Length: 94
Image (tube, rainbow, N blue to C red; front, side):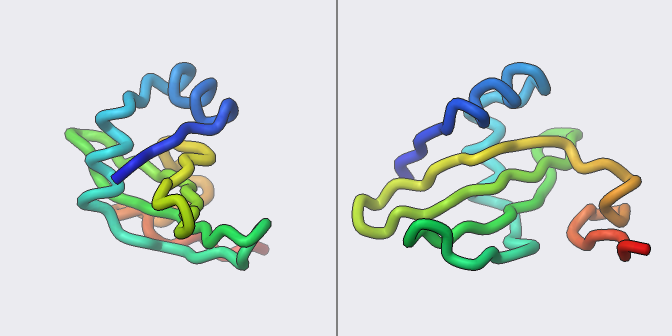
């Protein structure tokens, strides 16, 4: 799998202490929690999972023509927005 990191993802991963190996492990073992409408001809999705002792989310877009997966952002889900214990479902908006 060829990964490319957006500038935004690179900054956020550094701030949040999420390494490139963490993202690779998440994409290999995680689950797709949400799929998003095509944006600029790229299919994007939210991948969720546990890497080591951390729950992580990553938004990625697939460029099927070039075979590249673009990491858009990555973060640890918050209990205010996501339902534990697996953080796969959003809390309902009020």
